[in-house]
Length: 487
Image (tube, rainbow, N blue to C red; front, side, top):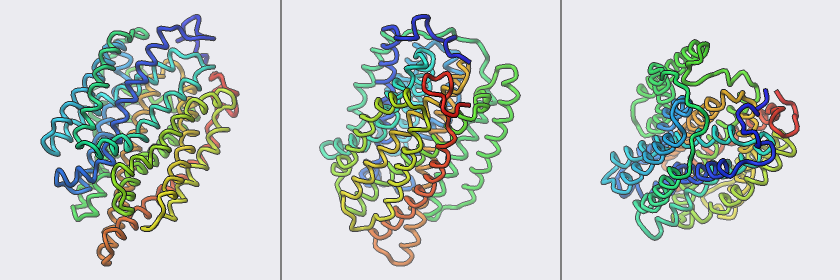
């Protein structure tokens, strides 16, 4: 099916200035909100001391943020179709700015946690809004290039989060991580409300409340269960973990069944007909693997670098900066390569490089050189840069235009679920292995080094699945790129 039905008449060669402005404002805003996903990772050791909390509790500042996004994003497919673009943007950035202000003023962990949840509510709306807008306004032949810019936002913002927080923490307190972001968010809100125009006609399908509840129980239960495994390593009851998993699995299964019934009347909260495209399905699965790897690594590396290698937050942040910059610089290049060569030509080398990087972590010890860590992070960043743009572009390009908002929401939801799961899984492996070593009388450094080694090994095995998957993602025929194995 051609995408031209949702494009403006002059779109084939060049986008109108108005559309370019809308996309630019959305890109900047999304960058700011996504930066927040990982800004806490380097700050975690500082926060644990300052707020007097355990690591298993502190990880909720990242996992809780992702969990909220996994719960809110399924509703965004509906919101994008129902609420005018400008109003929805206003709600998203107001929520984010309010959450940032509360976080900056938070007296302790409970308020800081609540602030992160409010921030996440705004962040959850921004990403699907950006993706749907781009798919609607950008001609197929130019999508790779524009999606390259989006992949900068999605991959570089979380990658440089640790650097930003490392720099801030070395000079100022952790609250300033929020005070610095707040004015940028407010300026983006004001600018956006002046520049953004409504795209498409809102439809008036009623919101299915049972679907919202089931989605929250399903995604929430799974992420909570995964995150709780990390705590069970430090002596809490595992019964709650199984209850959370049971609620999550039953909730998700019931949610899926309800969507299958509702989509016959075009009333689904998340229309699952997007999965009839093999390319979209494979791209979603691979995106989950890559996000789990990226966010899990972003949380593990600072723990290893600070606890085991004894680096300061500033050194940790600076050491992770080259990888973030490389990912950013490669974004537009990979986008143009996609427009020329299609998805598979980029995905195969990208997943191989990512896997090679993760396997290199098996050489990490308590005495490793920082150059080994830098080399690992650079190779991982290059690999992921070659993976994200083709997955977004081919995955959404394979979906019918009327399902773009659902496709964006599904991508967003599975990404956050995978990110939270990746963080939870790797932190859990770290906790369990460290506890075993502690029982054997190992020092704190040896415990952490052993825990990080075990966690990275799990990530390395997962990356092998991604290599296999990369051979099954074709380039959609109507996506402007050569139709290599399109479906």
